Structure formats: C-alpha cells, structure tokens
Image (cartoon, rainbow, N blue to C red; front, side):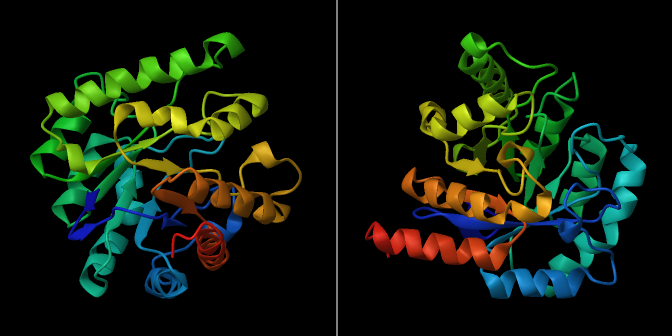
Length: 265
C-alpha cells in the first residue's frame, strides 16, 4: 500500500485522528489551527504513521456543513502539516471540492466515508485518479441491513466502489478498504463485522479498521479505550494494515505487545 512517499506492507500501522471540528463525538480528538502542529508532533512521537484530519463530524445524527465551510476548517492545517512533517496526510471528506483542494495542497490520501458514491457522477474517484492519490473506501449506506443480508449489502456497496475506483484509474496499490463499523449497522451487526473482518480480504486490498471509542462498546465515550485496544489487538491477529484511532500511544503499545506475542516483531 502506497500513501504519499511511504509504502506499507506487513504489520498493523496507526492512522491518527485529528478533527478540526467543534462537534466530533470524542472531544479529545478535536483541535484548532493553533494546536495542529503540536497535535501532529505528539501523534508522530507516539507512533502514528499517517495523520487523518477532517473538517466535518460524521457522528450519528450529525448536521452536515457545506463543502466550502468544511474546506475552510482544514485548509491552513493541510498546508502547515505538509510543510512541517514528512508523514502521509489523509483528509476525511466525501466532498469532491474538498478532496481536489486538499490534493492540490499535497494531501496524500482521501478517506471517503461514502466510498466514492456520494457524488453521482464519479467526481471523487476521477479527482483521486487524476492526482494519483490514495483512497480509503469505506462501506456505508442509508438505513440498516437485515441480519441475513448484512454481508451481501456490504459486498454490493464495495463491489460498486471498487469498480468506480478502477475505472477512474486509481492504482491497485493505492486502495484501502474500510468495513464501515458504526455506519449503516446496528450494534450487533458492528460486532459481527468486526469478528468476521477477514471476509473483506476477498477484494485483495489492505484493510483499515475504525472502531476507536465507538458506541458499539457501550457505556460512556471516556470509558471506551480498553475495548478499543482489544479491537486493535484483534486487528493485529487478523493482519489488518491500519487502525484509525484517537489514542495513538496506547494503541501503538497494544500493537507492539500483540505483535510480540504472535512473533511478528
């Protein structure tokens, strides 16, 4: 998997979440422009190998902001991160306008929670292909699947997304798949997808797991670190290439210890 000038092959790596939003579900992930360099530096020191920034919350029942507002929230941060750090930069957006501007400023990966399907005319995929960037394709949908159709619905969505990516010229080694835990699924289905995540290997692309502090773990957000770390250990066992997390240091230590137990170090 290539992201910017880095190649990721074996092991499990950390994508660090930094939200330039006032309303992201986990307050600890929020930052402002004045804090951004310090936040990135800490994430890198703690073990992050990719930084993921976003200008819009996608928490349950979120209120969308328009593409220009979203870009205004992240524009300066994209510029200063690329100027000051040699680390791949991911931008979390489903707006083609934001993706194009971010890639113009040097962003390396577009993390699209609508799997290239928000824009009906394939603008997002065409932009990513044009800039020879990488993409994280996340499975998503309106509504909840029935239990018996869960994996069929996931595969139907991803089949379309992967075809769209290929048709737009996005290279094989620049595609990452995210099963979309927390999106279009109830609690029990989120657990089923997590426990059967290896089914996504059918596409032949590396995988990203995003469970950090999500509601599937129950309880208060502040109390969800330990179950998050258990899912990160599971990611190591399932050979998932990336975990997208809020708590970099703790997840890095979980990856190291689980890798050591499995003889992967």
